[in-house]
Structures are given as structure tokens and as C-alpha cells.
Length: 78
Image 1 (cartoon, one colour):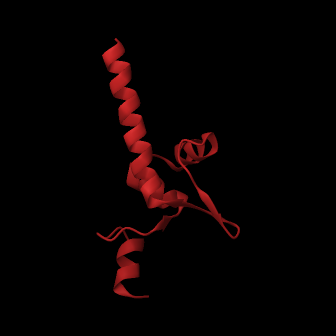
Image 2: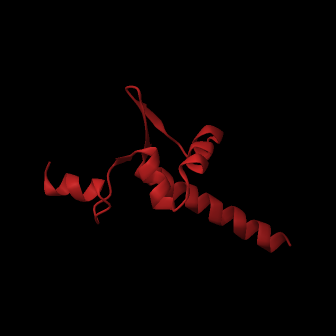
């Protein structure tokens, strides 16, 4: 395995293009069960790769942006 691939897998500075559910949960600092719930609800996009489920890294950024926007609008309405 090359150094680039190792850094993406072991949490180095180069993120992988597609993440496992566990890697995505770790990046969001949430549990695996909650990550699966976010995928099931459609809040976080995932794609099938053969028999596996992978999360495009940019989908985590999009989820956080949407969550922040929802939080801001909720707080401004109060």
C-alpha cells in the first residue's frame, strides 16, 4: 500500500474519496449506529460499491452545512 493510501486509511491528512460508514462516523465524531441512521434517513448520501456501502467524503461536508443552516434558522426564529 502506498503512503498516500495509508494516510487516507489511517486518518492522515489526505482524506479518502470514499469512506466506510465507520470512517465517516469517526470524521463526524458520532457513533456507527447514528451514522447508519443518517444514511437510512437520506440526510447523508451513500453509494453502493458492489456489496459495500460507501460515503463520498464531500457528502459529510454537505451534511454539516445543512445542519448548521437548519440550526441558524431555528435559532433566529426563536
